[in-house]
Every structure is written in structure tokens, then in C-alpha cells.
Length: 445
Image (cartoon, rainbow, N blue to C red):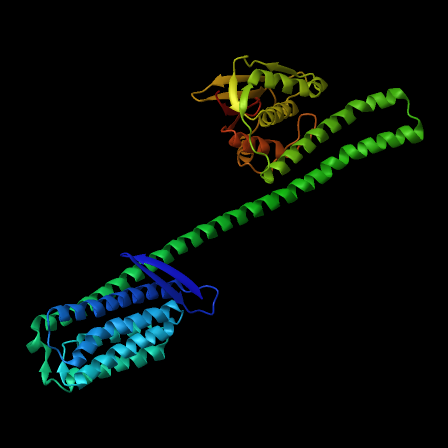
């Protein structure tokens, strides 16, 4: 059972809708709103019309006064039923008492000109009563009463039109008003209900679309995860086994220091790859959990680049590659420092990977309208248009470097995501045999 408090035209209407369900049909609530408004009008009519008749000193028969007061009594009773949660009883009372009481007046050989109300009761019973048998029962009573008082008998001893013609016209106008007002309320509530259904359907469609998008993202992410971890399982195993074999040989065969020293560069290269892989992997997992929120601050790109160049110094010296930092000191951007370092480190590491020995990697910048573009350019083998296309799809893709360095494809994916969170973007320019240039932008400070 629910309570519905309505405020209309200064009237406070409290409706209790009977229901054994935890939720009530919104259409039934709308019907009860209309029904209560009609009963409030009936209550006011049953009070105002008799008072007007008394003030006018109308000499009407006693039964006419009963009819005049009946709307107040019946509608008041129905409102009490609704207040106490007996809405079905109130509906049945309304659609049986009104036509029966009106017929009793005509049975007293008095024509008050209220036959149009029988049409009103029949039409409204079909709309308001929840069960078919109730609508048929009450509609049949209204139809039968109409036939008895207006079709089978037309001549009455007392005619209200002769006693008080304005009152007689007023009854007809009142009946027409109730009919059209009831139809207007029904149409208005049905329109509102349809709009609610349309809005609800639009929300459901939006939710469905969101669920489908999330499902597609989860499917892509799951596919990426499977591919990624298959590569990780292979690539992590190689350096671990290399270290294991080195330590085992040192322990079992008492290897000379010279031989151990000769193996160190290869082991170092493998561990450098493993370190980069683990860092990218952890950052990728963090980003997928939506935990890596950007915390922008004022950054000096030249200083950030110096730090990154220092971090890759050993990797560069291992291939005798010269790294040139051409960024000026006054290049200030507004971005997250850790994310910017990760982007720049991945791009520089990637450039070192594809640059041959004794090559060169250059880091510089260009001024744009609202951003600063940083480029990382190498003089390596370059890439084909097909390779660039695969990289720009933001999909899982990797190739081996000039010294067979491995990769996982996580780096560029992280770069794009972190740049997006900082208001920037990544572009790739390359030709086979002409080297590559990776550019990213960040908002100016």
C-alpha cells in the first residue's frame, strides 16, 4: 500500500492505492489522481448548488433537494474510502450510487435534466474500474438507468425546466463540463504517462548502449590481456633462465671472472628489458583499474628530458648511440610529471631499440598554438606504412629491435592513454630507410 500526496489548485488530496505488490503501476496512480479531482469537484458541487438554491428561495420537492445534496454525500464518502486505502470500494460506490440515486429521483416523477450524467458514469466506469466484470457491471447499471428514465419514459409530472429554467440549463451544462473535463484529464494523464514511458525507454536504451560498449571494451581488454600475458610469459622466462644458468655455472663449475665478465653485457641487456617490461606492465594494470588519475603541475620539459636521458644512458652506451637533448629551458607545460616521464622514457627507449650502433637519437620541441610538441627522432631503419598503421590502431603490436631487442607493445598504448589524460596526443612519422619521428603534445603553461 502506498500513499500519494497531491496538491492541485490549493486542494490537498491524499490517496491510498491498494496493492499487494511492492510497486504500483504508475498508470493506476494517475487514474486515482483524476478520480479524486472529479470527487473534489462533486463535493464542491454538492455544497454550492444547494446553497445557491436556498439563497434563491427555490420551491423544489424534497427529493430534488436530496439529489442536490447527493454529490457532496457520495463524493465525500468516496474520498474517505480512498483516504483509508479502500480505493476499489470507493470506485464501486461512485459508479453505483450516483446512477441509482439519480434514477430514484426520476422514479418520483421528477425530471431534473440530469440524464447526461448517466453517460458520464458509463464512460468513466470503463476507464477507472480495474477489472472487466466491474466495468461491465457498473456500465450496465448506468446504461439501464439511462434507458429507464430517458428512453422508456419521457413525460414527467414535475419538470425542473418549468420550476427553475436556469437551474435546469445549469444541470445540463454541469454534466457537459464533467464529461469534457474528465476526458481532458484522461487525455492529459495518458499523454504524461506516454512521455514517462518514452523517457524510461530512452534511459533503458542509453543504459543498454553503455552496457554493450562496456561489454565490447571488456572483450577487447580480455583479448589484449591474453595476448599480452602470453608474450610476457615467454619474455620474462628468458632473462630469468639466463640469470639462473649464470649463477648455476658459477656455483658448479667455478667459472673464471673473465668469463663471467664477458656474459655480463648480455645479462644486463636482458635485465634492462625486463625492468622496462615490468614497469610498463604495472603502469598498464594501474591504468586499467582507473587508479592512475592525472595530477598536472608546471613542468620544465628540458629538466624532465635530462632525467630520462640519464635513465637510458646505459642502454644508449651499450649500442654507442648518441642522445641529444635540444629542448630549451623555458619550455613549460601543464601535465602530470610521472606520466610525462613515462611517455618520454618509452619513446626514447623505443628509439634506442630501433637505432643501429653508432646511431643518433634527437629530442627536441616545436611551438604550437596552445600546446608544445616534443619529438623523439632517430636515424634507424624506419617503418613501413603498414607498420605505422598497426601502431596507430592502438592495438597489441611489437617488433624486434636492431640487436634483436624484444618488446611487448605496452609502451605506446600507455603513452596514448596518459597523453589523453593530460590533454595531449601522439603522432608517428616514418619512412623505411629514413628513420622515425614520434611526436607528442602537452598543454602550454
